[in-house]
Length: 230
Image (tube, rainbow, N blue to C red; front, top):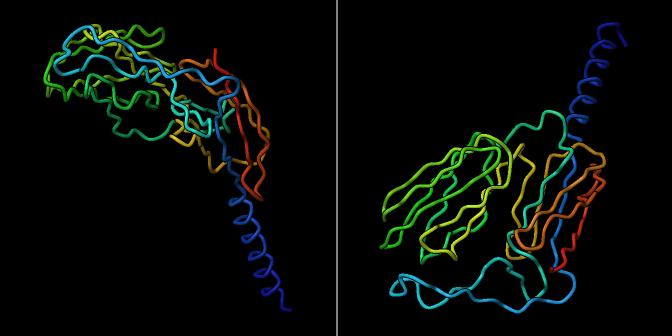
């Protein structure tokens, strides 16, 4: 092989190596499950505006499938990879519909905005007293959108003072590796460098538990996290 050919072959080999290394990423596939006794379904009384809100509402602070899968748990990676920037800003909405916040739990990146809506034919308000973000207490008639920006990572409880049973949660994310479990209790993280990761799993009623998982670039890491009713 000529010297030029040898140099070209070496360059191609180095380039191929670089591309193969850049693609080495792993993923996590997990579920959040309920352990222990299954609490009875709870109802909360409606004390005002029964003509629209009804006489009672499901508590909705613990939603568990027939397979004991927990909905609305928030899972995040505590030791996120270096340079894991917050997710790009996206439109996040929380509606007040049927005298209930929908959805009940949302994730927004630090610096992102939640648009609070009111689809009900009555007056609501949104009230929060976070520690790291700015407190707010705003009345909201039907059809008005109130945008609220959350600058710092934390978990913020939102209440409607006019309808005491109404609660929502805004989880302000420090980086993009946050997820809210769906009806199947599932969550997923992709594009993770191989390594050992510490996770936190939070639920408004079941509290916070730690978990850990080892990720490689061969197949998704599988994880089941159990939360116990209090």
